[in-house]
Amino acid sequence: MSVISVNGVKFAVGLDWLPKGNLVTKIMDARKGGSSWFVDYEGRTGFAGDAGEYVEGMPVLAASLREVIPDEVWMAVFEADDGRCALVQVRDGVILANGDRLLASAEEARQALGQIDLSGWAVYASAGVIPGAQVLEAPGLGGRAVLKRVPLSGVTRRRATRTAVVAAMIGSVGGVWGFRGELLELVLGAPVKEDEVVQGGEPQLSAVIDSVALVAGCREAIRRHTPGIPGWERSGLSCTARFGDASLLAFRPGLQGRPVLVMRWRMRPGGEESVLRQVAERHLAEWKVSRFQGEIESSVVGREAWAVVLLPAVVVEASGLDVPGRMALRAKLDRSFGLRSGTLEHGEKSGVIRIVMKEPLSRIAALIEAVPGFEVTELSRGGSGWVIVGRRAQPVSMRETGFAALRRLIQ
Image (cartoon, rainbow, N blue to C red; front, side, top):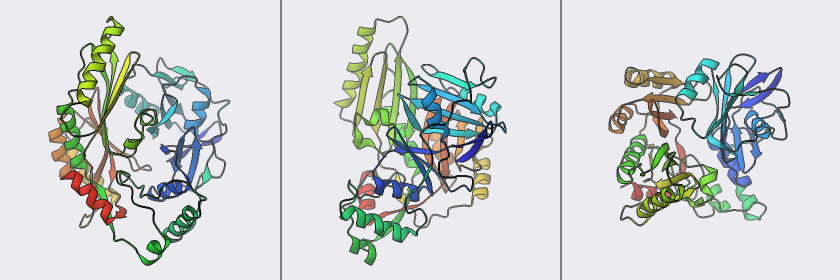
């Protein structure tokens, strides 16, 4: 999360994009992510941190680009006055959860795109940044999507929680109250009463992402659901700890926030479209009726197909976890991954850590296990191997009964 200047005009970049919820959801998501600013845009909410440069009404670059780019599936690299570059990814008109990033230079942006399968994507860029890309011009950027202060961002957590609960009780805010921190939407708690908040109520505990469990679940799901489909080529393969692709959630809203394996394919050229579509539909249907545990949602649309496989829960109690400082974690990751990875990037401001390596998932799990305090949020398979996206562990609070339910799913 940061601010860049383009021809003297400041834009907010690197926002964390989540599905748009009600007021209570927005307040709690912002507090869990340490955000004081937000923008609502086309069914999504982008959250920004508490950088001193943010001001009310500042335009958001990702949404501004969405206003001027006509395609539904695209990525864009936009260069700032200081040489930094914003990378924005949009699929089916929706800004992806991890599709708003700030890179240090045009060279870093070119390297990032070099690790992405660009088939099916329209690519835009500032003049001279990405060879062959359609040229983006700065004039005309801006628009209706601008930053606003998160409600109650200036008050304490206890006061904000009580205020939100009261609002829900009197009916001014719709929806069911639930703990909506990172990865904890798998189990929604019953509506919270005000006396529970004031007097303490049900015991609380802290939980974190079990990175090794995420890698293990991903590996087992790939083993059980072989990614190959005859006549089709794989265009995407990723495991994420918190599913938030709005275009696919329309088919199964219940997968929101859950750990999943996502697979995408495109039809090989030269084949008979109707025949290959039937092959894919039969292949995916066999998965749905198989004896394997876990929910599966899939679809074949035109020359593309996708499947989402629910993974076991990936949270563990944070009790006793010694979360290292940022620099200490960096040193541990450098020692563990440095000589084995092709890329090891530490986001100085965003806190996002990105590792690219060709090791198998079994080896990756062992390397991650050797670095306590490193939370993996996503794994994806690219041309250069596995791309691991993570951060320093961020324990979040949840109800004891909710955590117990999650543990039953893990075991």
